[in-house]
Amino acid sequence: MNPLSVRVAAFTIAVGTLLIGTCAAQVNTAPDATPRTSNPVPSDARLPQNAQQRMAALDRNGDGSVSEDEYEDSIRDTFRALDADRNNRVSPDELASAGAPQQDGMLSPADRIRRIDMNTDGELTEEELERGAEQAFELLDTSDDDTLDLGELMSGGG
Ligand SMILES: [Ca+2]
Ligand SMILES: [Ca+2]
Ligand SMILES: [Ca+2]
Ligand SMILES: [Ca+2]
Image: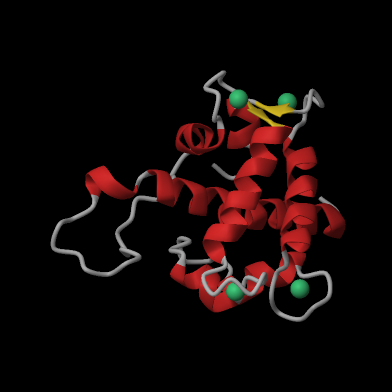
């Protein structure tokens, strides 16, 4: 891989984790939540660990693939969900408290934002998030049919 494609791949995974992890965290809130938990963002919230779960979170009409519309809807919802103080920007703190998984070797929330932060102010606007996500969609859509199937989602780090 040349340096650009390494960077682009890291970028794709960053966006995918950022977006899809958050969507599915919401979808999965209730049934498995531990009753004793009083934390509004349970640290044990189940995040999507594989492409099947990501697909379930994104495929709103249940046809087994993710269209650009479904993807864009999710991005908008995700942005609103992340922007806790509603100032139309997502800060690293907001991203961190959304429960995105932090594992060994993973980028910190601030670093993930930096990947798609076009004006380098350290926070994401909806436009920055959408633009980053569009690029991620195109990279994942290797068959170029404007939908993401399970295999393509898997190739995005799931
Ligand atoms: Ca669909
Ligand atoms: Ca905010
Ligand atoms: Ca920004
Ligand atoms: Ca495709």
